[in-house]
Amino acid sequence: MLAEMLTVDTSHGRETEALRPIAARLRAAGIPTELLESAPGRGNLVARLKGSGQKRPLLLLAHVDVVPVEGQPWTVGPFSAIEKEGFLWARGVGDDKAMAAASVAIMLDLARSKQPLARDVILALTAGEETGGSAGVGCLLAHHKPLIGDAEFALNEGGGLLLDDALSKVQSVSFGTAEKSYQTFRVVVKGKGGHSSVPPTDHDPALILARALVKIGEHKFNAHVLPDVRDSLRNAAAFEKAPLSDALRNAAASAPAITATDESNLVKDRYYNALIRTTCVTTMLSGSPKDNVLPTTAEAIVNCRILPDETREATKAALEALVSDPNVAITPVNDLYVGPASPIAGEVARAIEKVARARWGTVPVYPSMGTGATDSRHLRNAGILSYGVSASPTSIAEARGGHGAHGPDERLPVKWLDEGARFLRDLTIELAR
Ligand SMILES: [Zn+2]
Image (cartoon, rainbow, N blue to C red; front, side):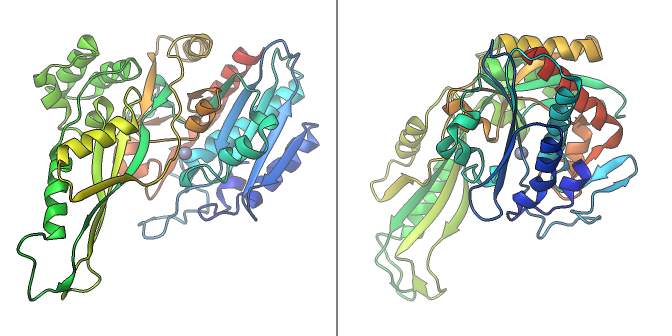
């Protein structure tokens, strides 16, 4: 089923095509299944296994759209599902089709084994996650709410089953409880325009904008260690070298506070920096359309990733205070929704720990925060406690070697796919029985 899904290029729509054979399999197993389109070709599949109704439903969510491959140096056909050197190579294998295929297998397995369920188990395979989720889970929540809206918990992408570099054992298990929120700002300075042979001597919009962007780019938002981040830092210490490993261990111990010394060591690594503070970075710039024309508008796009305990409004106010220039207008560009964090302790956390320990012994199990955004924010926003989990073990070395999500030559170690799916199945049964 995974190979079947991988060979449909869902980087520009066509989710329906990838989901049609899945819907047929589920229906053949007697599981009521709907395939709904938010636009032509943009399919979303929802299937439901009935439980006793003693508890509210569990939702298994995975997206079947993928990011594009254009311009990336792939060494294999990205939609050929090639198996070689012990890996399965394909766009979307890790993000998020392995989880989608595992979730389908779990539904079929639960139906076949007639597993008694204390709650309904809902499967939703969605479109458009990579472009904000409105074609997928956003559409389901807005227009088909009864199909998934009664869920108490959701298991979505956004966790980790981390292998050692030799891909020989599971080293740690993380589950996503929080995500940074995403807010883009437009930063605009207006000018009078005119001929570039007579530049302005008092009000040059490009210069004013540049000064503002230097202030924004050099600003360090307040660093602190959230409960969702603390254990990720502590566990990362095991595979980093000193002084970074010491800083990680210290920051976990002193959380939420972090000393200036530890902070200065952590920020040398862009990933750890992003875990301990809100970040804002300039991603787009524009000015005049012609080299000999003065700009009437100089504009930058600044993308902020905001810690879950801070707000978009406070971030905007911080940028305005930093720039502190009435000629510079800062306005929010989009609203991609923010969802509250899910509890780091409780029923789901206990179930993940129990299932992981039963399978992999004394492996560390801990909550984590995503620096990016997934469909979980839509679910959390709708009152469903969403948790990021993984069904596809891989190593840090694989990700750092460029084989992770969104990169060229995305791949997963084949021998662990089965184990990952079984972990998700055990977790589903633990929560739903
Ligand atoms: Zn994804």
